[in-house]
Image 1 (cartoon, each protein chain N blue to C red):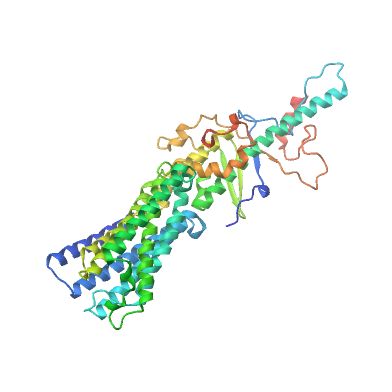
Image 2: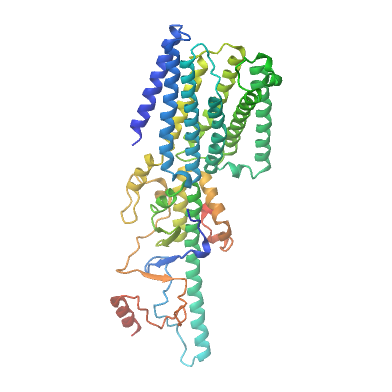
Length: 351
Length: 154
């Protein structure tokens, strides 16, 4: 059922990988092909996000925890893709500027962080992570992950990538037409912090769910968590090379971004329950006898003798009718719900 | 989505006279053996005990039906309408979903049906789904004896 969608992802991402290899092999930089590749990355992210949003519909959309998780993760990919599309527009409009300077782009990229955070938290409802937090060991694990991630992120994203915390507020290196320092600091720092939070959440949820998560959707969920770890790496290296002034459109970091959106797309599509529903519906019905391809749960269940269903089952309503003055259970009072043939048999037996 | 409220749930149990778990229906004439010189008061006590036993059996079934409905409602918060769809695939369990309320009808041995229902969800997310089921019915399990609790919920 989802095979065409998977093929679409493989083909589009495959073409993008090949295109990148050719571009790098030819040593092209700051040329149209580099900017068009960025446009291709935006198209990939936006189209993959659309597939993810459609998948969330099969979980009831925003009416279920998993539906919300899939929806918001896909929505985050959409805003990222729109940011990437804006990035492409500005680079085509100003080819000599490798890193566009536009607040709308900062807003779009920054928006992905809380959207993805919410999506990860909603998805964690299905993983059983909260049950891992019930023990002291689980609580200590989550706390240590957050501390380690914070320290690692400060070191990687601020000290190594930017040369220190103060550079976020150093106005001497900014061009004259630059955005306000507070905006740059807010979005850059906020994005870095958000990345760290998402990484910490992904690692924590993975660890806390280890004993609980299983079933058909274990692999897609683990892959989604892995994708956020990869996004963290991609953002770090982008900040690092951008800080050094050596980033260019078509850099290998962009290949990591392409890998992230591709992996997320495959994982979100793997979360589609409709791709499995057909199997269970075909193998399980109440009236049909057991078949060879029935799920394990039937074969593992205790054998139950087939009930002899009467012509009309006797229904017992446990909530008494307030208008009925007679007591609830009176074996001697004939029940008007009994079909005549059964009532006659009862009378014969009584006789 | 309307939240499931156990107090407003209407459960029905369909009794199959020939199934191992059937109990005498209120409509069947139950004539306990009485000695020739039986005291009328003693006969009434015996009939009352029979009625009580019947009521206990019916209430026991109702608890299992409530457990099924609560499990489905708990899973519904995680996986949405799929929870009802998956429950409909369980042999021995009839589920209807109307106006935000879940109605369960058991037509087989309740403990086995509940185990199958949980296994259906376990197929999705593994042991995490089992924990969701346990959490959803924890307030109902205290009403059951340890031997009456399905293995999946222990």
